[in-house]
Image 1 (cartoon, rainbow, N blue to C red):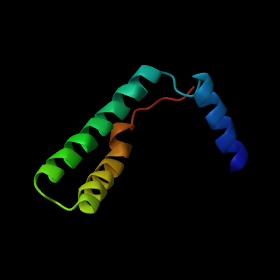
Image 2: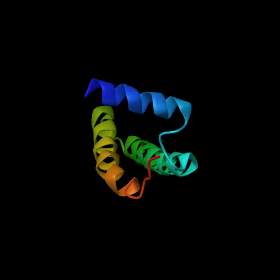
Image 3: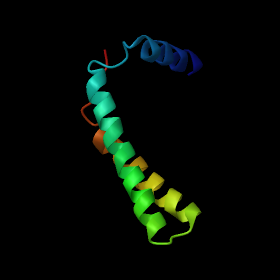
Length: 74
């Protein structure tokens, strides 16, 4: 398991893990923006900080398989 992780990390750092790195970045930004907006809105509504972080993290975490469903690796 560890060799697989280190190999993937090396390929990622060299920029050779994903076929289209721009697409990966775009999808990551969509998830980040969704979490940021959700945390901001919940914070403005007066929700406790711990809950305003946990709920968007859970929601965006559940959305990751959908966001990255067509991701292609080299």
